[in-house]
Image 1 (cartoon, rainbow, N blue to C red):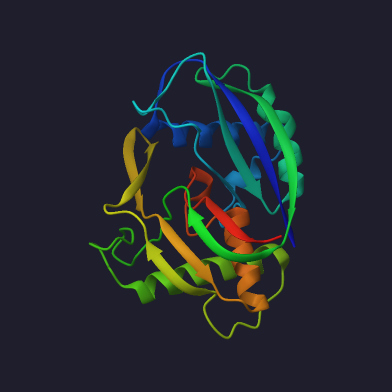
Image 2: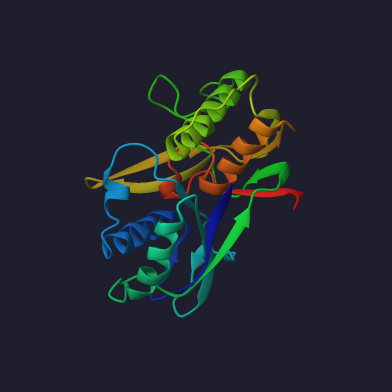
Length: 238
């Protein structure tokens, strides 16, 4: 197994508030897909198999400043998609908010993962139409089960094979934020917030668990990955 990563630099054309940055990046990426006929990735139902992290560094004022360069990363299990974006991200010159000026591809082979940390909120839907938080649910077993099922379904969908699962890939999960985090988008003129949390996850050591931990790292943990949800950082033995 391996995943593909684009390490990008973006020139900011006008000040962008932090809370609007995820939607702007998501739209920039999806528009770039359409340039080479990859728009069906966004249009189709189901998993998109990619995730991106937010703009870095984050300014103290939570505003990305006009005229500055900021970095961000896109990851995917789909090499063809990454190859397309490596070209088309830099062709989106008419975007009024930003322009990607660099996109360097890197290939990461599977390695033994000891810990995962979420750099962006991990979003998990619950049955009442809301999102998992300690206030809305607080059921850690439910959270762990849904994160496992999400990673397993992504693996099976992308690779077209089932795994012989005996246990959750998650050995330990810790909530790292005091209050829920959120990602803001606009749909049909209305503001929508996806609420989530920052986690530390320790995966189990067996082969299946390690595959699922790698999938979570490769294309995001939980849901709303194409909006920047669930971008993970991994520690381990390479």
